[in-house]
Length: 114
Length: 112
Image 1: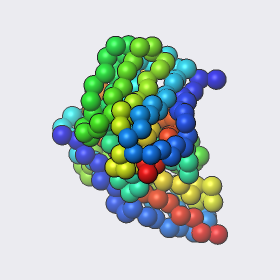
Image 2: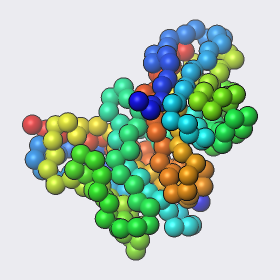
Image 3: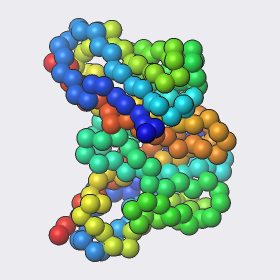
């Protein structure tokens, strides 16, 4: 079954730790995204990728980095976690064919930095 | 520049009543418009999308939305609410490029 996966689902970690949030999709989509979601707020785009070896920063300034070495995999890394990074992180993907601009979302990772 | 405004951060209806969630958009080009639903502890799921074909769009779970260019609106409706419809709903606009802009969401409560 084609799907998009995120691990871990929940993470509590101390300040200064390095963390990687995993995202994988089995749909063969070229476009992938990372969003930050806080209660009552719009989803904020923090990173996106057009395809392998292509990554861009989104509209929301973020201290995280991403990589896209394989089509199906788009991990997000925080080198040194801070309490201000506490949030829900959503990964999404989208096909490249013309007229298909909807996005498919993973279940999210809820990150708490203490 | 694109933007989306969802009127009402919370909407409460009784089971069996009409659901109306409001969305207004701004776009400099003919937009693609979307409604997504998010259940607790899950990601967003596509409910329906408008792609410049029919202005009345039918989606999953009995929801539909009407694109009104003159009003720059794309309101979501369902004739009869069910308890399982309780969730957060997001309106979104795409300029057919790479980025999609999401609204702040409307949380729907359904009373028994």
